[in-house]
Structure formats: C-alpha cells, structure tokens
Length: 466
Image (cartoon, rainbow, N blue to C red; front, side, top):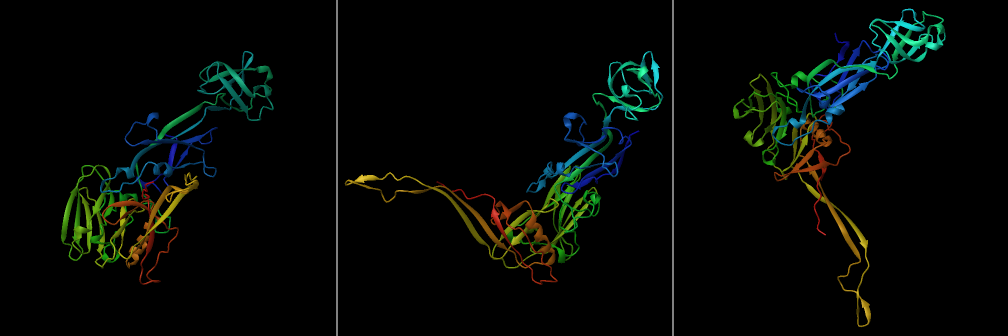
C-alpha cells in the first residue's frame, strides 16, 4: 500500500503560466534525511531514467510536513507558439508525474541491549544490517550512560532479528537506553513511483479573471468534450453581437482560435448570419490529437455580423461572435497578437498612421593623405576625414484605432501586453514590438467615445549598404 497521499493536484489541462502545484503527504516524513521526490516524464512513455524530463527533491513544509512543488516554470519551457492555422502542438505538452520519497536507512531499537560473547548485541526484527557494515549509533541520552556505544562501529555478527557491534559489553552501564542505528555511508531507501498521475496536459496560456489573478482554471470546460466547450482564447463566448470582437473585411485581419482537439474526431467550422442563423459557409477539419488553430476569415462573412460554430462529432461545440465593421478606413493596418490563452486575435487600425525612422551612425576621424600639387600639399574635393563605418535605421509606426465599444477596449490592453505581435499592412506579416510601458483601459461610463493609439517598432532593422 502506498505511503504517499495526494493532498492537491492541478486539473488535467492547465495553462503553463498559472501555478501547477502538486501537494502530497507521506507517512515516513519524520525519518532522517527525508525528501519528497517529484519526477516528470513525457506522457505514454516508459518511466525510466533516460526519459526523465525533470526531477525535484523537496523538503517537507515546516508547518504541515507536506511536499509541495510547482512545475509551471518547467512547463513554460516546453511550450511555445505558432502563428498559422492548423495543428499547433508546439503549444501543448503532455506529461506523467511520479510521486515518491527517500530517507536515510535507519532503525530505532527499544529492546534492552544483551551480551554476545564479549561484545554488545542489539535486538531488532528484520534490521537489514550485514557483517562488515559500518554503522552510526545515536543513543537517546546522547551517550552519557554508554559513551563507548555512541558513534561509529562495525557489525561483527548479524542474524535475522539481531546483530552485534564491536563494543565491549563491559563498557555498557545501562542496557535499557534506546537508540538509533544508521549506515555510516548514509545510504537511503528510495521509492520514486509510490503514486503516479498520468496524461496531464499544459498549453501556452495564462488564465485569470480579468485584472484579478485569483480563480481556479475550469479545465473540463476547455477540454473540448462538452457542449458548449470553450476554445483556448481570451475571447468571451457571448450570445449577442453587441459584445462581439470587431472584424474588418478589407484589412487582411484573421483570427486563429485554438481548441483542444482529438484524433478521429471530425470538426465542422460553420459560419452563421447572426440575423437569422442562416448558414453561410461550412468547412471540415480532421486534426490530430492536441491543439488546433481554426482560422476565422472575414471574407467569409459577406459584409455582415456573423458567428462561428466549431462542432465536433464527439459532442463538443465552440461558438464565437464577430461584428462586421464597415466604417470608412484611412488605413488598413492590422496588428495580430498572441492572446493570454494562446490564440491569435487582431486589431485593425483604420485611422491615420505615421511612420518614423531612427538613425544611428558610428564614425571615426581618419587621416587624409592628400597629394602635392605645384609644390603645395592639397587634398581633393572628395577627401574624407569623418568616415561612417556603420549605419543603422529602425522604423516605428504610430497607429490609431477607430472608435470602439467597451468589449473591444478591454481587448486592446491585451494587445499592449502581448509578448508576440505581428504587423500587417499588405498581407505580409512582420514581427514587431509594442513600445508601451503603461496603459489606461477606458470605460464607457467615463468616456463615451473610446479610441486608442499605439507605437510599434519593427523587429528587423532596414539593412544599409556601406
């Protein structure tokens, strides 16, 4: 019977950027040198040393004695992102975890010491010591009564239920003092797989309740087996277009909605008119097990508000609404961004765009050779003293949104904090960084008309010849 008890464990599917903590208890936690051991393996693989992803040895927590380990940092290093439609298992990782323990081998004897010839015999059932073993004996009184027995000794006789050490019986003054015996080399009892949890999953996401960090992740709702299920996106699942994400047909803007999918399941992506639930288009997908980006294309909406419904024949159903924006646009700039839960959303910047460049030059003042003409030293008109040997130019863009509602204003702050952003103006996507160190999330009760601006810097500098 396992001596490990699982006190707490994360849900089956967890965001990698949230705490992923395991808490366990063990009946041996008061043994000397005790450590809890957490061993991570890839899922569906052999639990052998060659397959170990990571292993943690943890001291018991002082107040409870429990073993606690958060593996979120490890999981973050095992997932990443992919900016395209289709299978995105780079954002997903499955693992098993073995819960075990170790402690220094030792016995606590309580029977009275006895004589064995000229030496001292210790009685203990199934002690495990053998002739020649070096042992350390620590007595309950610290060796006051029997100082010769305290410390390092050698086992000179061993039977199943007793053993003798090389301590003369004549030195023993009190045979009833209890003690502890351990190996001198501090060898340990180690059990790595006292309990095992299999087929745990993480994805490249971070879950929170808005600006509030608390709230446990409702894993079952995101596993893609319920009707309705939730996609791995920070888009909410509204039932009206009044709180739908904006989409502009002429702006190259797409959405990639990431869902947990399963092999052997056919998923149908349906586009519906929100006015009368009329089916506009339908596409079938048969992904492999893992995560899949379903592409939402504005050109499919036929210039109207619409919603998409992703239905799997395993009983899962995802639904998201989009609001068509037909206002006149000065520019067709778009920023794609990785949202908090791992999907890709975008913002269209329809108002004026300002492009700026920053130039840096590295120069040195070189010697001018010149030449002698008519007995005088002169230099030509193209002589160069200050020579530029390295020129760099970086481009920034100031982008401006159109007026937006509260829902899209809330989405905008996610763009500002996203670690992965791509700029698109002609259908070609360029990596960029958002140059913002703070933001104000406008509220319609305070400001009826909401629009936002952002400055981005392209991630690649323009090459300059020399």
